[in-house]
Image (cartoon, rainbow, N blue to C red):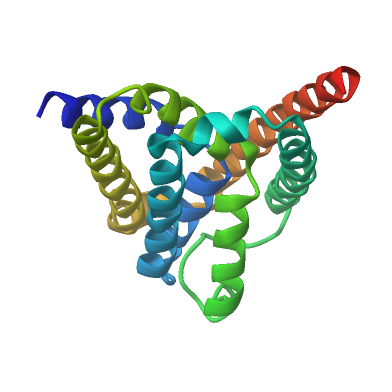
Length: 208
């Protein structure tokens, strides 16, 4: 139970942030569109990444500078693009963000974006593979399993809680001004993270 709780707490500290993944899940929760599918993909992404990290492959990945460089470049491009879209959304003359025929997006497109925000963000690999793996990787096998289940429990509760919780508070969160503020905050955060990735990529290039 000790290592289960440790995994739960560590994962909570890593997962609670306004990033591209959480912002997208929050939006789908407000719109009440494909919430289960989005939350499930986010969770299954964590299942894969956390398992890889805790079982020892996280350290191997973190020691490959070329892989880190590639992830940093792809992540910076993706986050700059996502941040730009968030800023552009602020000036759109839409009304409240509610489920309507104009807001409905196909499941295929939603799944593509979900995969992108889940696997094209280097910070996901840094947090869920490298950091979580560094902490859990030092434990004995039985302790690793308990630690991993604790982390995965946190991930499950967080993603499905955010997705369906946003729908519950949709009348308050769906106001256009509220979403404009969220878009602005998300855009700023995405740009800051992208800029940090550019600097990180530059340092890696200088070391090669």
